[in-house]
Every structure is written in C-alpha cells, then in structure tokens.
Amino acid sequence: MISVVVVTAATGAALAGCMPGQSETQDKDPAAVAAAAKASAASAEAKKATLLKAKAAAAAQAHANELGQIPVLMYHRVVEKPATQDDRTPKQFRTELERLAREGYVPITAAEYVGGHIDIPAGRHPVVLTFDDSSPSQFDLDGTGAPKADTAVAILQDVAKQHPGFRAVGTFYVTRDMFGKATPEEGAQMLMWLRDKGFDIGNHTRDHKSLRGKPQNQVASEVAAGHKLITNLINSGPVTLALPYGNQPNQKDWGLKGSSGDVSYDYGGVFLAGYTPAESPFNKKFDPVGIPRIRSMDKTGDCAKFCSIAWLDWLQAHGDERYTSDGDVKTVAFPKFKTPFMTKRFTDRALPY
Image 1 (tube, rainbow, N blue to C red):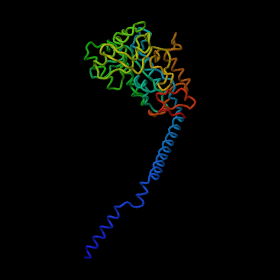
Image 2: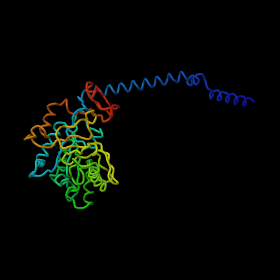
Image 3: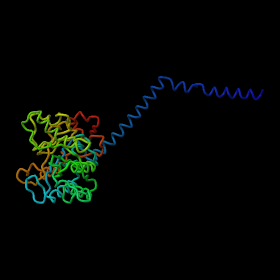
Image 4: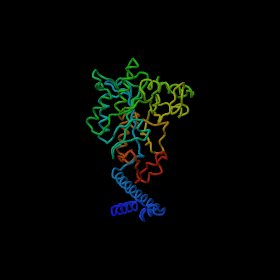
C-alpha cells in the first residue's frame, strides 16, 4: 500500500506541474502579450535607428553623394593609326583608364547603372565604359582563348590587374558585324566569353541605321532586329539600347519599349552619343529615354569642352557634383539638402545625412 500511495502522489505532482500556473496564465493575458510585443517592436526600432545613424555617419565620412553625376564614356575603335575622330590608340585608351583608376573611379555596366545596382567601395566613383559597333579592335581572342594584345578588353584587364578594385567590365553595343566574325557560332563564342567575364551586351540595332524621322513600326523593327541578333546567340537579352549616331526617333520612348513580329523589348535605358555626364539613376533628373554619353577624346576643337578629358577635368575640380559611393549598395546616401532631388522610385533606400 505504501508503494501505491507514493506512486499516486508522484503522479499527482507530475500532473500538477503540467497544469497552467499563475505565470503561464499571465503570459497569455492579452495586455501582457501586447506590452511584450510593443517592447519588442520598440527594441527593434531602436536597433534600426542606431544602425541607420551609424550608416549615415559612415556616409558622411565618405562624403557620399549618390545623387551626383556619372561619366558614361563612349569608345569605338582602338587602333594604332586612328582614321576618324572616334578612334583611340591603345596608348590613349590605356592612359585614360589609368587616370580613371588613379582618380577613384570603378567601372560598372550600363545594366548595373540603369538598374541602380552600383556596388562599389565607399568614397569611389562609378564610370560606365561603353563600346559601339563591335569592332575587332575592341575584342578578339588569340589561339589560347585570351583577349588579343592591344584590344580594348586586353588593355582593360591589364589596367584592372595593376589597380586592385578597378573592375574589368564594360558594355558592348553590338551590331551585325559582331567583332568581325563570319559565323553565328563565332559570334556566340564572343558574346558568351564577354558575358561570363561580367561584361554587358547592349543593343545598337542590327544594321546601325539612324532612327530619326522613321515611323514607329520601322523604329521598332530596327530595334527588335538588334535585340534578336543578341538573343539568338546567347540566352540573356540586352537591358539597354545605344541609338545609332545618337539620333532619337520622333517619339523618344519608341526606343525604350516596343515590339515587332515575335520580338518585344522593354529596356531600362536608351543612350545618346554626347556630350555631358549622366545623371544618377537615383536622381529625379535621370531620363531613361535620353542618357548622355561622353566621347573619349583630348581637349581639341569642340572637345575642348565636351569630350572625356575635359569632363574628367571638370568632375575632378567639382567633386561635390559627381557621384560618390557610401559603399552600401542597399542605401542611397546624400547630404540632406539634396533630398528634394531624390527620385520616388528609390525612396525606400534613401539615406540622407
């Protein structure tokens, strides 16, 4: 009998322990639950405020201005003996890249630019390197599968190796010439190599005909043909268009969005051919249907004011006007007085300081 009593007592004690006590009843009290939730939310908000304050302080330390201007440089052929005003020698091209590296620029692609994905270190400045017309002088492969010496890609990669943090990326606006390759297989090899190395392939139309003055269906046909030229060779479509000769169609947005036959396109930006730095994609002045580019050239003639050397000089002298990164791709940092210039599209990332 004694053993039975002990077991019963133990069982009763165990059952008592499983029943709701005073503490658990309090935990389920709606007022207590609400108070706990409010305290947790307040704690989370306090942590968030502390983090934002730290990020703002870091942005101020870097003199971040992610609403500032970005140079989009335009290149054509890179040859020893220039035949047109658009040509640059390998030495001139290398010299310009080395200057960009020294002055804190980091290359990004046109797709990254228009998409607002500018992931560069704090205190550095983005630059977009664009190459028109898919010339063999821009890119070709040697017998080992490496870029041929003195092509734009080879020079860019070499400068990047010598300057850590300077990315070897750019955007190639291709046409049917496709780097001088005769077969679709060769063209595909070129585009796949560039894409796999982080370069961006953009549409320059298939036949490089001016779109000015043409009806909408013809504009769409020209753009769609360039789009299909690329997507027939690689399984990723272009994100941007560079207008042939920089000539806009009668309605600017015809180059941005349209369709022809079985091809539709909807781009993040359309690039012109000159002559000023471009607006930050986070700035309300950013115009996706008319993004300016800067021709690479020395300070001579019209280029004394409107080409790359002149504009790089100006941006260096007016550092508060150019885009300077805060180092955090998830935020858009800028001095508080620039708040009215922030575009609504990215307000959730705004970090005024």
